[in-house]
Length: 354
Image (cartoon, rainbow, N blue to C red):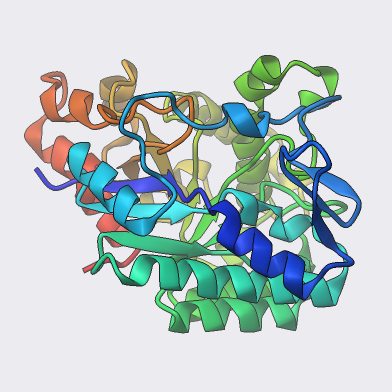
């Protein structure tokens, strides 16, 4: 079967960081302990304190044979895991929406997008890159997203929330309109320790506890903003993927949104106009799953199989490389038609891949 990994990651390594430090020495420098970077005076990742992120030295899988520092190595690792196409979200690049100096933020985004496009170019379509953009910079963010589309990048990263705004803020409507015009899907991806807004995780300083709740909380907050805030009504062709939280949370949360829409939905002015299930059916909402999630057949039974995409989370410690696809290829509790959709066809539609 064909498999498209809808959410892998690139480990950018030294080349991107070195070029950034050479261009913006006042904004970015190595940490004195050698375990990450200092960007605009903040540690990336911040691995201590409330909402702690993963320490740099523990972020990758310890499985033997990992070769994630070059495009050739990643392509070979994808082959070993029976992955035909791997969509690569950023690692360090996830910092882009948090950068505060406008010129630096725009320059870094453009540098990253050119870097990831070049990184993927030699793979002959096996590796596909995701763009970053300083989303709060208005026209500049739109221009950068348009440039990323011209570079061949297949989606743009969307943070779960911004420093002072939720994703339904009217200031973001031109960005969403541009994404539709460009046929550019958006992928919501959080990252503890990367100075994105802390959603619930400010109560914990242990990374394991932070990681347990950060990704599903991020996706629930983002979905609440986009659905109840009327973003999909104002931009009915917008496609958004909610990433790295699995699929089991979605039936519960869609039901919860639906209950609030029916009973008190009118309390949100200029908000949702339809039952939240309708946005799922309309192709606005997409979600990734892990291949072995036991709840997957139940989600398919309740909500269908047209929006679920396989994701490996390669090369991170919590992924299952080099056997991340094995459960999907072997499980007998979903139909072959559903397996084909989850394995590749849905991601092919979401990312507009050949």
